[in-house]
Length: 401
Image (cartoon, rainbow, N blue to C red):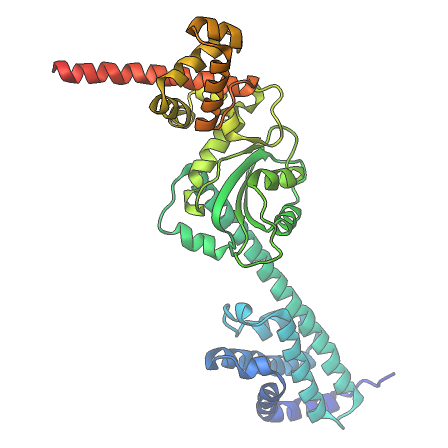
């Protein structure tokens, strides 16, 4: 067991340490430059800040040796002199390397002054290491809270469509690696949301995500990962949504249409939110379900985007292609999707009806023979005919004027 120094011996040691502190700091800085490549490569300003931390550590040790009860102030003494951006410049590992080199240099200089002083140095270095870990942990926690608030702000801007000139810089600050097309996925928030697990799943799928929690609603903005990755599996957004589905709570899960870029994700978000609001009206809706598969329900709920989508993607292309296709589709749907009844009404052969329905599918991509798609097509025809009547009345009024 090491004998404790007498008061006189301790006073003499303290006086000696104060005399050599300047020389010890100079030797330490030289050793840092020789043994730590990252220190030598730093810009002069940051290298000076790192050196200031080392000097503060030596001065703080002398004060601590005089009063070991000052342990709670170690973090403030050693790291307070360093600018805040220093935490972004060097990692915790590099900080511990800094502590090690400083301790080794000090040990070499005080060799021969007794084991008591050496043990004090080791004890102090342990306290500094713990203090450094605490400083970095607090910084990481603060950064995590800031990132969460910033991410929530970005997601909210996307949902509301209130993108401004600051949005790209906010997205970049979050470390967004997505590029090109994006889609928005809306569902319920689980009782215990594991954000890290959602991000890990996304990375395995080769995509990046922005996560927004709005009460009981969980929103994911999904973008493909960085280009050039050979291991990135190019999956459709519907398949990606299916793989991310376990991260949501029970209830409906709606995927918005694909948008060309993150700044255009507002269209996908509005469609997904509108679909999520009416998804319960489809008794057997799949999970996840595309927002465009809920176009009839969205239109009935008054969603102007759904109405415009039905007219632009179904009614107008059919009308522009052939009025016979519109007439045949109307008759087929009105007659309960019966080929024979439609043929009798139109005075054509059933094969002609069958051919025209195939042409309808070729033109717009929806098959009228399926019950769900028949509902979508009939809603589009109703909305298109209403809009057409309004257009004709307005045109007639203009001509009379």
